[in-house]
Length: 67
Image 1 (cartoon, one colour):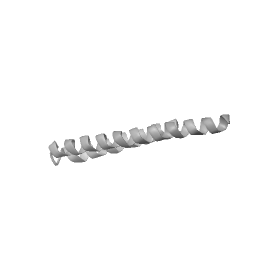
Image 2 (cartoon, one colour):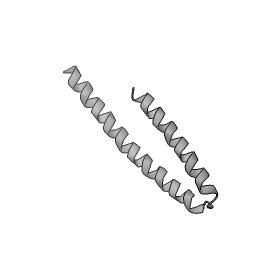
Image 3 (cartoon, rainbow, N blue to C red):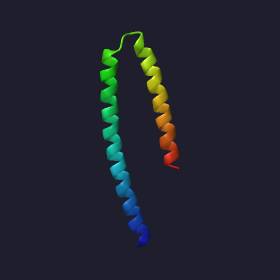
């Protein structure tokens, strides 16, 4: 019984996390598009490189949290 409760609770937490993560991704993408719209052609590649680094760091953090 305990195992079933823990599994249900874990599934509930995962559902909440997934939903919030999707919302955060949408906000992040909207902000990025707004920034891209105001950057000069010279600035855009630098911004894209910075985004790549941020995304890589976020991926590493997420992987370490899931272990």
